[in-house]
Image (cartoon, rainbow, N blue to C red):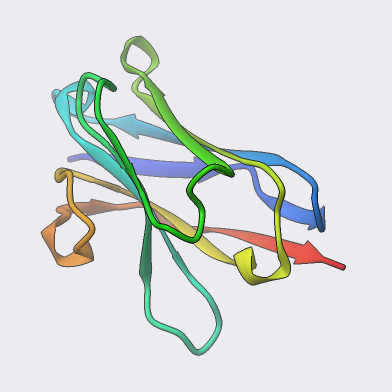
Length: 121
């Protein structure tokens, strides 16, 4: 059984930075492509960033490009989302997802429980 556990986030000031981590456990999780999604209150879940299993290919939503960086350390079965220059509109619950390299949330097989990021002005 694959489990994804997010950590990090919390309350951050506008213009600040924070890093989310997603620790994966289960068989061959280091071979899974991974992604980060977010869901703001009253809105649909949206793609934030994705990374293939080697880490050699990444993809970003236009709204976060140049501010967020996705990375992974396969020896630790962990994926990271470094978030810089945060804006109030980045406030959302952030979810780690595994099993696909896609902007479509329906393509992913595994999901974490989510972690709240609140950007205050």
